[in-house]
Image: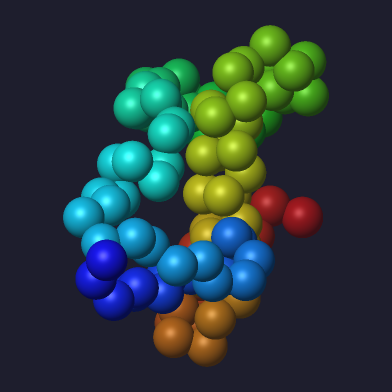
Length: 99
């Protein structure tokens, strides 16, 4: 029996020993389904958020797939962070306010 190699990630908890000859595929018995957001739907939703004539955003979010909702919220959070960053201060201040 060969030496054990310890592996861990922050979400797995404590490290566990790999046995000699054991592969990552043998350990992670997770189906290899790749879930991708529908970026056309996500960006269409984001565009509608900035359209003052569009209503029902919350209902639209409720109808979207969870991965699309998560992607839209992540992009909106990133936009919020970028717009409040000092690095973008000149670009943000050049846009007219509508309030």
